[in-house]
Amino acid sequence: MKRLFLLCCCLAAAAPLSARDESLGRAVRAVADSVRATVGVAVVFEEGDTLVVNNACRYPTMSVYKFHQALAVLDRLDRSGLPLTTRIPVLRSDLLPDTWSPLREACPGGGRFTVAELLAYSVAQSDNNVCDLLFRFLGGPEVVNRYIAGLGVGETEIAADEETMHRRTDNQYLNWTTPLAAVRLLELFRRGKLLSAESGDFLLKTMFATETGPDKLRGLLPPGVALAHKTGSAFRDAQGVMVADNDIGIVRLPDGRSYSIAVFVMDSREDDRTNAAVIARISRLVYDYATRR
Image (cartoon, rainbow, N blue to C red; front, side):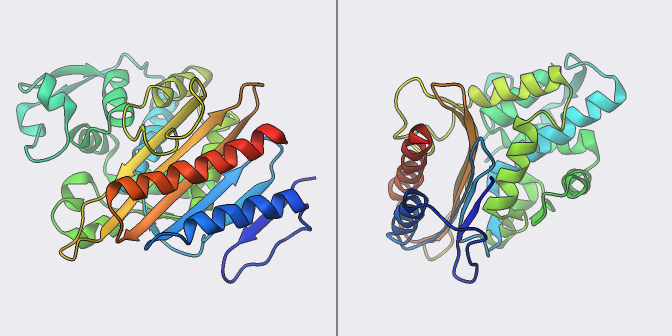
């Protein structure tokens, strides 16, 4: 039987918990409460049991939304009958300075790149220029927003591209979600409900190859544990507060089972290392629990 155990200030458990379930929830809550930040967590285990902590907030997605965008891009290819080898021109003028862009560093003059190559830059390397290029390919953030809204995961808004978010600190709050909405989306993807087999396999492999955030969800996991994930990090405001530091992903256990996890850290007065450590500690608590289930 699926269980939903909620540890939010205003939410009650929907089903009785075992002592071990309650222990996990208390441990995750303790880590979340140990820092000067708002920390939201959601996990969906293989059997459908769900843990949610501090879900009643709008958490800035930052680059986590590049996963949402990748789903929309691949859905467009699937519906249009276009292959991953479809090429898109990248102009020098598309490669803006003063933003994270591995593609600009590798090919400053631009070129013609396959959708597969661009998604690898956007998802695995979190390239901001490529992200905005893919928005233009789709027709803007509103297209991604409509796609996600149509999936029924709830509580998600994709309203701004990277260029817009870089203009003002407050713009980093324009794209938001909740931990539970994030893991619901991961679960739809993990269970093969969204994309063709080819597109789904491609995106999963791309997320397994993610290079950013090795100290977040992956930080305290045992060596060799497979993690397909997407990170997101913000800038600090004038008072030194970190708007957001996030990681969402799918963990594959040694026995072949998997679970989806999202950890969002919002409005943190801690340093970057502490933010990452909170995500890593929660990730390890969940992993240890999952391996004993």
